[in-house]
Image (cartoon, rainbow, N blue to C red; front, side, top):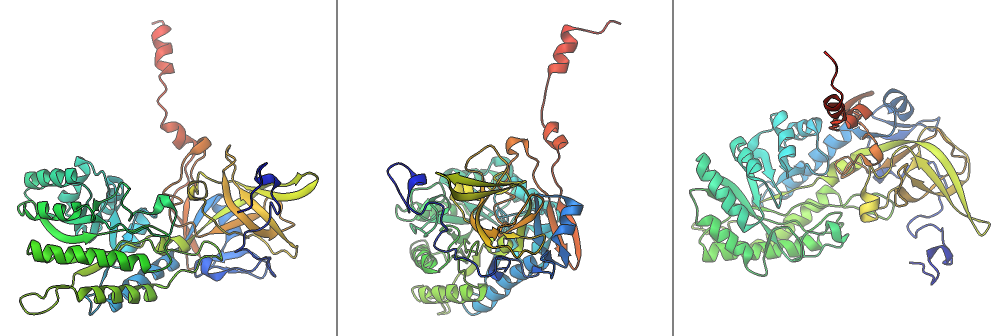
Length: 494
């Protein structure tokens, strides 16, 4: 990090590119791992996706817009399902894959997930409602959350969700009362805080002890939670243990330690409580490539390494009555790794502003018609993104630019550093890849900005799967009693 006692603007080399961003020999070249599989660049320089060029998309649907490659999404979902089924075939049975709906969920996505044979992980009543709208099978739904309401739990049990991941002793009691009231047994997993710190941003690391999720393994809370659940068989079926160590993780080291600690608790439950938990969930958090600095693992390699971890740890298990090792059936919860690379955001350039410091060009700001309202991750997590000129070709020299949004915040940055053609002008289209996860779900109406639509493209056709918000939508939420007051103070004469 460059520093100077008078501030960053005075530091030597201020305004230079980050180490991972080399000067490009071809500023129009696409880095394949960042983009959906059907994206390419036509001879005229226009970006195409699913057989549709982005200029056509902008003309028909406007900008800013999220563009989702349906073929790519389905392919990634299917890839995880097939890879984990194959890798775990002889390690507790084919592993189950639950799509983490919090990454991005709408009715079309829920339907695709259902059709591809995955489970669905939800964490609010709203996400459950999306699943219900498309008739998603209840037994293939998992329900997360550290503060599920009584109404949400009752709806989940009524709908017949396949697993509820319990997060506190208060929730255990809450579920017990509802299950007895409804005359059902709640299928539950215990969320275990395994004490593993993933190498990621502190706000998305969830496996360490000091955070809001789960029962502490170290303090014995997790074991006690399992004991309480097993002591109430009229209300519960204990499916097993669950952990999640964080997000945007690029190796299996953390999962190895997490699985070892989970398996240790699994063995203790078998030995001290005489109960073999049939399942174990290792969570998600697999990283994707946002820029050239990221090198994610393939689902096949991930699955093979995870299966090896479980196979090694399973040797610690006590044998069942038949002399076999009772290896729990494993499940995982990828979200970002499926939807993240399948989507990009399309913007239109509004202004281009070179900034001079002491008479020397320091940076060029390229402003677009979106920003932190449609992608909060750079502001929240200092997340890096890439981008490219999408609407035409250019032979201009590469120019280091910062792509910024239209909001009244200095931190409203879309892409911190990227090389764009030096001839970029207002009206050009810019595409930012990797925006499928946690962009639309974290979006806001900041500055009263309507949220962009989500467009699904496939086989030369584009359609809206989440419509664009309008100013009328924003105003429809306001409750203004001025008219009623005026009527009361100045009643019309009869």
